[in-house]
Length: 149
Image 1 (spheres, rainbow, N blue to C red):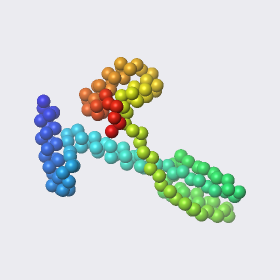
Image 2 (cartoon, one colour):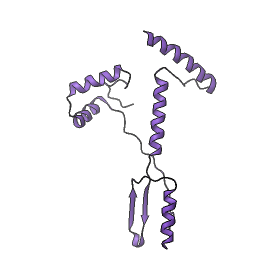
Image 3 (tube, rainbow, N blue to C red):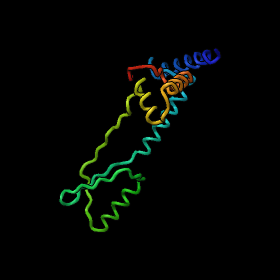
Image 4 (cartoon, rainbow, N blue to C red):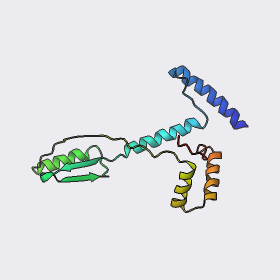
């Protein structure tokens, strides 16, 4: 009961401040929502920092050398390119592309059962009990669904 009062007290007052500050009535804040959003943003920033480029190098006779999953700091590629140039090899950047990799869709009841059963080797009853506990703790949205939205 106390947490419900805290939720309303914090959520209503913070949400009202957001509306006034940004003029967008769809913004909201809450006792749990706000720190969780902070963690999501922090995790997103960590994942952005660990993005590793893929290099496709076209060699003579149209051979293609693909180099991927190499962690590079901002100095290293320039240093490597300079060392290669010193050896008399010409380097030109032909094309630079960025692409977005979307996350998989949320689990539906059947997909969570299948994945947990295959990966964790646990039974359906236990999976559903664990999902129910996660739901009751507020860590996941309602888990008995057939719509991945």
